[in-house]
Each structure stands twice: as structure tokens, then as C-alpha cells.
Image (cartoon, rainbow, N blue to C red):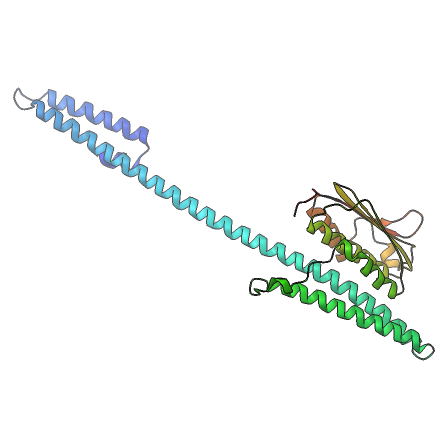
Amino acid sequence: MVFGVALHSPRRTSLITFVACLVAFSVALALQPSGVATRTTWISTLLLTAVAWLAADNLRTRRQRWSALRERALRLETEREVEARRAVESERLRIARELHDVVAHSMSVIAVQSAVGHHVIDTNPEEARRALAAVETTSRAALVELRRMLGVLREDDDRDGAKLMPAPGLADLPRLVAGVREAGLAVDLDIQGAPADIPLGVDSSTYRLVQEALTNVLKHGGSIATVTVRRTASDLSIEVVDDGGRSPDMNALSADGSGHGIIGMRERVAVFGGEFTAGQRPGGGYRVAARIPYVAGSA
């Protein structure tokens, strides 16, 4: 009985049972006729009772430890699965944003230049030729970007990492602006502040923010845009404003924005704990602004 109670009950209950049994055995032995209960009988009875309790208590403790280890292993496995799913979802969102930025920008430029070429092909063949050249350049650049992203997806299987092109950043903004100018949008680029050791993630996100903002200007009829980038040792500010040549549906867009491009820009800034605003300017036009804090030299 002592063994069974100690094995299946809490320690307090098993101790009460153990003490009660010792008392019961002692009383029973004390009531025996003289010469029946010897010193050896007392010692063996009490010792066997103690051994039964100790063996059961030890086995119960081991079972609890094994159960706790199994639960901990199961919990860790569940946490690993959750983290893996979260990492996959995060990577899918990142790739989706990258694809949206590349494809939306390139297709906007191609659409604008194709329309220009189609409009002037009979009256101004030279202008149509320049439009087609811009379409070719933009489409080739888009293919390079897509190949780069596919290369990143195959990076685990590709041992030659040197073949993967780095993600575009601040240094590529002049090239981006030049391509947008070829599409017919007058863009003024102003990069202020001394060069800083900007993390790669902030560097790439800055490029994508400017790219998406200029794409929106192209898509919604803007003719003049100003891009201002201010760099400091602790944060980076981006501002893209246009002259207001936007379609009615874009003019109706609130500061919170509901388009995929605005949402994507907001998510990029939120990753770094920054601030993002987008909305109509009081004097007309549209303004996209972001501030991204960072620690110089961090990844």
C-alpha cells in the first residue's frame, strides 16, 4: 500500500500514508505477546516500509522528470515549426514586395514608352525609335533584376555565390532616375549628407521606396517629381513629391493609402521601426516621405 500510494499520489499524501503505516506497524508490534516481536522484527518491518516508500517516491520523481523532458521536447519542436513557418511567410512577403517593385516599375515605364512610340511612330520616327530603345533597356533591366531574385532563391543550390548580383541601393538611384527621365518624367534627384555606413537592408529599402514612389508618379500622370534623400549618422530620410498631375482615383487616396504599393512601402519602413507618410500636398500634388533609423555598420 505504501508503495502504491507513493507512486501515484503527491508527496505530501505519500508521506502521511508512510507515517501512518509506521505508526500502525509500531502499535501492532507493540501489542504482540512477549517474545513474538523481537528487535529484528521491528527493524525489518520499519526498514521494508521505508524502502517501499523511497523506491516508489524515486520512481515517481523519475516519471515526472521524463514527462517534463518529453513535454519540453514537444514544445521546442512546436516552436521550431512555428519559427520555420514564420520565416517562410516572411521570405514570401519579401519576395512579393521585390517582385512588385521590379515588375510594377518596369511595366509602367514600358507602358508609357510604348504609348509614346505608338503615338508618334508616323509623325516622328526618331522619337518612336528612342521610345522603343527605352522599352528595350527597361525590359532588359527588369530581366536582370528577376534573374537576381531567382538566383537568391537558388542560392542554396548554387555554389558560385559570386554570380549573384547585389541588391540595388543608394548608389543606383542616379541610374534609376535616368531611366525614369527617359520615360518622360522630369525628375530632380538631391542626395544630401555625408556618406554614412548604411546597413544593406536600409540601403536596399531606400532604393525600393524611391522606385515605387516614382512608379506611382508615372502610373498616375505626373510630369515633374523631386526626390530628396538626406543621410545622417543615425537615420535616413526620403521624400518624393510631384506636381499634382495625378488621376482622380489617386487623388482620392488618403494619407493611409490602400494600394499595394503604399502598403508595401509602409511595411518596408515598419521593419526598421521608421516613420512613413503618404498623401496629397496642401498646394497640390502628392508627397511620399519616410524616415528610417539605423545603427551605422550594422547588417
